[in-house]
Image (cartoon, rainbow, N blue to C red; front, top):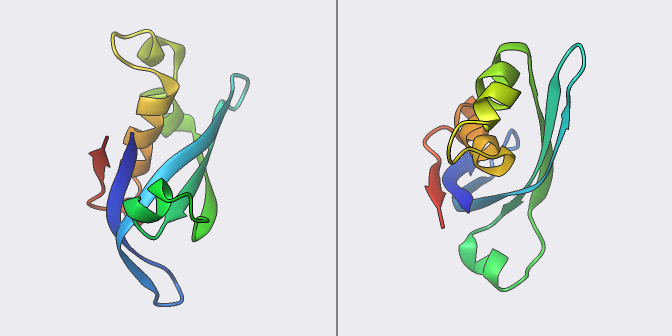
Length: 104
């Protein structure tokens, strides 16, 4: 599972078929609850499949409302939901990954 999207970085570089893979998710259940998601962004799926290096690694944090929406115990206890699938849904909610689709 991964995301695919057109991504434009602040420096103006655009990846037309960026392939976004979650490397890890760390969830901390305390006050405040926080999920930290590290993603690797590859030029495209072929670069990922060919084991090329990622273009960039980014870290995103889910806190407060977004944590409760995607990573609370109640949500993760629902059928077919797990931290990885919820992590991709959270990423899709971010403006940076606007229009990203889930690919298998």
